[in-house]
Image: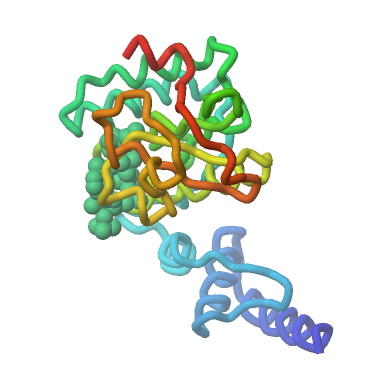
Length: 236
Ligand SMILES: CC(C)(COP(=O)(O)OP(=O)(O)OC[C@H]1O[C@@H](n2cnc3c(N)ncnc32)[C@H](O)[C@@H]1OP(=O)(O)O)[C@@H](O)C(=O)NCCC(=O)NCCS
């Protein structure tokens, strides 16, 4: 069954490419063939069509944007990460101290390079999130933040993509929980709950339900007590 489907796909695609002359024509012809039928896909493969459909199938489109990918930061990203937070937090009305906070965390023992992720579009960094080492009493846990998306790219799903990716990475690293200070209308959609529900006290009691916790697979209900951020947060 699998073999027959692949053979059908190969024949169909060869036919679609037969009249294409240049490499670009071949790419467009292939995309037209793939997208001609809704949800056409090959067994065992996943096609992410939402972002690429227009550009490949119809040629260059004015204002078109490439796919947004999430990956770990590299040294080449450091300056653009700073710019992304400056833009994100300036737009939110806050004093954009977060750009400096990322730099301070990077120089601290609390820095976890596996959990500093960028959203990139082509070569451009358009968003960033980081989790750093924190503690609930003596138990090592994660603090999430800052997270920022370029002001002109907000409300397009980039923040959600960063959040889902960093939570998945933290879970894969067997971290027990992630805590953050943030809006109660936004973070519950990612599974965050007020920290008090888990018996975890925020660094400042006045933060109340804005201090939220997302538990991961390695979480144990015995992980209760006082939450402490890494030292660079104290300088904010
Ligand atoms: C918060 C932030 C990272 C979210 O990224 P994003 O790419 O805009 O988010 P998404 O597009 O995935 O999600 C958009 C949704 O988030 C909601 N949202 C975004 N920021 C919000 C906030 N501060 N409070 C409440 N809701 C918020 C939007 O209303 C929207 O909701 P909807 O889908 O119901 O319309 C981004 O808006 C940002 O950089 N803000 C400034 C910096 C900041 O406040 N960072 C978080 C604290 S560390």
